Image 1 (tube, rainbow, N blue to C red):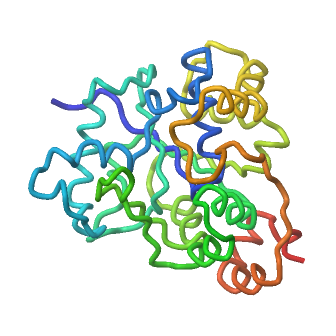
Image 2 (image 1 turned 135 degrees about the horizontal axis):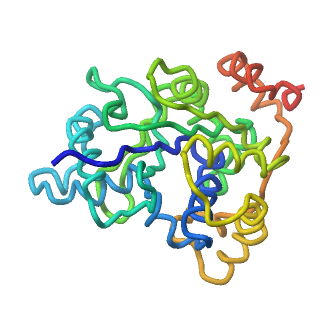
Image 3 (image 1 turned 90 degrees about the vertical axis):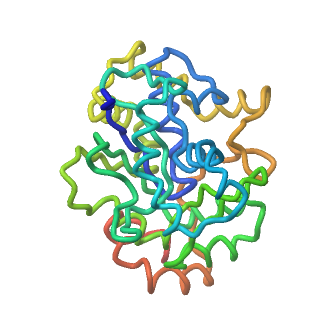
Length: 285
């Protein structure tokens, strides 16, 4: 059976606004926001891999390297499109959150272009990313920053004792470049997290346009539903099933952090070109 829909990828390096974009789609399609039902309309790719890979008895209890796990990804992406458990409410697309870099693994791209319908990529000041990641993972900011410059960095899928569902992140600049300068013939929208915060109405309009989403709500209503204050309040009242090791997921809508001497020495030599491209130089002075 051939899928009737294609995957629209909501991509970003972690802690760069991916959840906010997913909330926009939820508000538009369902007319409401529920942070604990985000996975119904736009699950995570690595989470879906963990969910589905457990049926392969020969590998369900063993950790796979990225190259080994990649062998299953095309089939899993096709299965996702045919999986009735996940209904996007969109006639043309199913949405998947992804934190992988768009790289070739064993000769094949992270995503299957034939099963893909478009890409929304969110990019954020790497200083703010490092700070937010350290809070999410419950580790010192230096550890998060060092991981961000590691071109071979892979986040292992050990959550809940499940050994697969890795995230091939690479370093921050490679991640950004891989998604924003690809050669695929797919509609692609790039949004800076900072621009999203400054002018949410414009960002929401662009997201609805590129995803061809007919909204149940106006852009102003979506902006209100997805406001940081609203989703933070939901987490405080009901928790958030995607929270990390920090005390809260929606901790701060941080914008414009300045680089410490350590961050400057670490990030500028490796990220300088991408930092300039997305106008993050003022935060490194």
